[in-house]
Structures are given as structure tokens and as C-alpha cells.
Image (cartoon, rainbow, N blue to C red; front, side, top):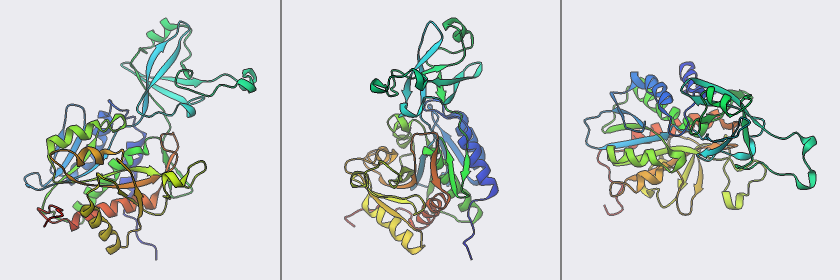
Amino acid sequence: MAEKSILTEKSLAFFEKYLNNASPTGYEWEGQKIWMDYLKPYVDEFITDTYGTAVAVINPDAKYKVVIEGHSDEISWYVNYITDNGLIYVIRNGGSDHQIAPSKWVNIHTKNGIVKGVFGWPAIHTRKNEKEEAPKVDNIFIDIGAKDKEEVEKMGVHVGCVITYPDEFQVLNNDKFVCRAIDNRAGGFMIAEVARLLHENGKKLPFGLYITNSVQEEIGLRGAEMITQRIKPNVAIVTDVTHDTTTPMIDKKTQGETHIGKGPVVSYAPAVQQKLRDLILATAEEKNIPFQRQASSRYTGTDTDAFAYSNGGVASALISLPLRYMHTTVEMVHRDDVENVIKLIYETLLNIKDGETFSYFE
């Protein structure tokens, strides 16, 4: 008999709503409101900060503090320059991929609401094959159907408006979740599900749990840098996405080998505290949760680095969700991996002792 899914109809409806909502770096608050509204029945209180990081807290009076964390922002574009004939040039807000832009619809966020547009591209008939130019940040452009710059401005579009893709959540072949911004609103979803399971299963933790949905990860881990100074945690378990390296044009010799559908990816890196990682791996083995391993030579490139090196050093670890086609509009993850990341974080929390230091010298 197949094991019963831990994901409910209500939780999947939240996941879809949360993914479909635009939450570009620097403009995460509407997504954070959706996230906090879902978590209200399962936590004791919320903390928010000036830039929009949201923290749901269980046992806020406890001295020993454990963070589980994801980040809420998605990559996007900014309006950078408007031509006299009404075309719009852009710059990145995070690691937006210029090569996927041509022929994509976009939403330009203005104070008057959404203005629709498209990334235009010269027709194949007009391009010279021997000198064909590839899409680059300085040659991709958006057309909103305006005849000139004045009409663009009358529509409410100006330099600095943020631009997102409208692509929404879909399920492919029954068990693959596909959407833009799975990196890393899947993380926010998974840590919210951990809180739900703790509540519904009546689990009482001996420490304070800080379920943290950070902002501005895509431009340098900035939200995590800020909120860790506020919380001052003893332990941080971060979840983000990592590459499925089994698709074409990825070199496993440099990127390692990880697959969607084969379980959470546990990281080895200087920022990852080894005794905490050992606890995670022991938990996975004890509970028969499949997992994979990944190594990073200098830094993880995730909020793990921000937590680990804060407050004199915080025992930190990274559990990643394998994902295909990162920073595109068709990011893809396996439902089983989503469930198993949730289970691994949940079961690891139940194995952390109050006051545990993870010290090598005890």
C-alpha cells in the first residue's frame, strides 16, 4: 500500500496561490501576507522587519532558538530606459535569464496596476544567419503596444517599475510541479507545512521555533543577514533549491549528480556545521527518508551562509529541493521530493535537544 501523502487539498491550494502571486525581490510583502495568513492557526506570533522578512514563531518565550528558513523573493526585471518610440529596455533584479526572455509575456507593476507587455524579438526572416545575434541584457526589449514614450508614461510605466512573468502553477504528468518562482517559494511552502504538521500532530518542542521566510536572497542573502541579527538563533536549518544535473548540457563532473525524485539534497560545505548535518543524515536513515548529497567548495550560495557566519557563529545546515530549469518560467520539482524535504525537517526538529550546542569539544 502506498504511503499516505502529507500534503492536503488545503495545503496544495495554498501552494498554488502562493506561487502564482508575484513576489519580486524588494516587493515581497503581498506574498508574505498570503504566507502568514496560512500559518496563523499553527503558530503563536509573527515577527516582521522593515524590508519584509516574515517569521512565524512557536514557543516565543524559550531561550533556545531554532530557525527553519526559506526565501520568498523571485527574480525579475526593472524598467531601465524608455525609447522615443515607446520600447522599454531592462536591467536585472536578481539573476534573471536574458536568453529565455524573447517572446515571453510580462507584467509591469505600476501604481495604477499591472501593464501587460511582451519581450519582442526580430523575426527569423530578418536576421542574418552568419551574424545572428543572441539575446543579451542590452538588446532584449519590451513592447507594451504604445506608440511613443509619452504614451508609455501615461500608462503609468516609468524607470524603476518592476517586471515579472505571469506564468502560473501547473502539474505535469501527475507528480511534477511546474511554475516560475519555485525558487524558492517552495521553501516557504515546505517550512509552513512543517509548522502545520507540528500543530496537527500535537508535537510540543522544547525550544523556540522561528519559521523564517526571508526577503532579498536573490541579490545577496540580504534578508537573512538582517533577520538573523534580530532572532539570534542557536541553530538554523535552511531549505532552498538545487540543480537537477541529469538534463542536457550540464556537466556532472563540475556540478555533481542530483536527480529530481530521489530525495532531499543534504549539503557539505564550510558553512554547514558537521554535527548538525550528521543529525540530519541520521534522522533520514532512521525514518527511511531518501536523500542525496552535494558538495560546495567555498560557499553554498544560499541563506545558509548568512546564518552560519552571524552572531559569532550559528550551527547551520542546508537541505535542498532538487529542481530542473532554475531561473526560468518552467522550474520543475517532484512532488515526492517536496514531501520528503518537509518530512526531513520535521523529523530533525523532533531530534534536536533543548540547549544542544553541536560543539566538537564536548
